[in-house]
Length: 225
Ligand code: CTP
Ligand code: MG
Image 1: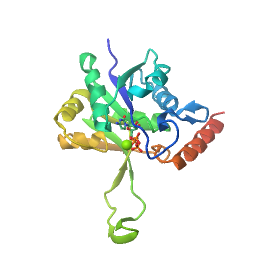
Image 2: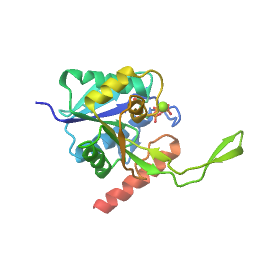
Image 3: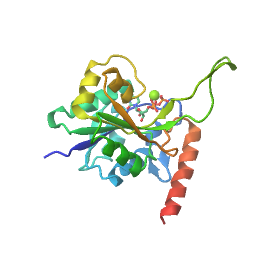
Image 4: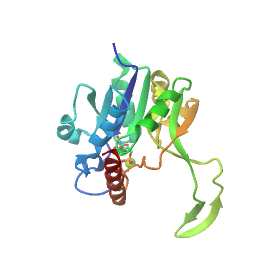
């Protein structure tokens, strides 16, 4: 018997914007790798089946994370192809739902995960979002061209949850680049509900994000003591 829901954690990127000796998902944050934090966040939320999508060059490091609840899959050259590889790997023992998450978001909370999961009881897809609060501009070469109305605009986070067969079909029908899986789901006409995002659920992208994440984790550990 398989579990009803699987988390698919994409971690096959090279982290060019963050720089450093190691791809960002393998760097240390408060004494453990970014991916160990990410895996634990899903375990704390009660997820029992995790597919970790890795770059073939990272196989040796990734082998240390293999566990009864964690399977490795090789990713592709883009985020889209990495997700697609993981979805295809599940076809022979398909879960009912999948949660697709950026490995580079180690601070995701159990409540963000559970809100997405709960929304899937009634929705084809669900994803955490936060309303944009800053003013928005379109600009070029250091000059502001025009203000962009921010009403109705949201910042998208992960995990993004879907019915497995829906998102598999959406991916198979999709060609080209996409920033996330909601974009692919919408291209296939799926209905996606927004659940509450969290300011702390940052995607490690630049070096400065590591300092912020370290502070957030330390703060959490002190709070939980
Ligand atoms: N990702 C992936 N396979 C790729 C590209 C990205 O699995 N071919 C994953 C990354 O590992 C990351 C998530 O998708 O967890 C979000 O991507 P991003 O933050 O852009 O990470 P990178 O692509 O690694 O970073 P950069 O764009 O700076 O190179
Ligand atoms: Mg990238």
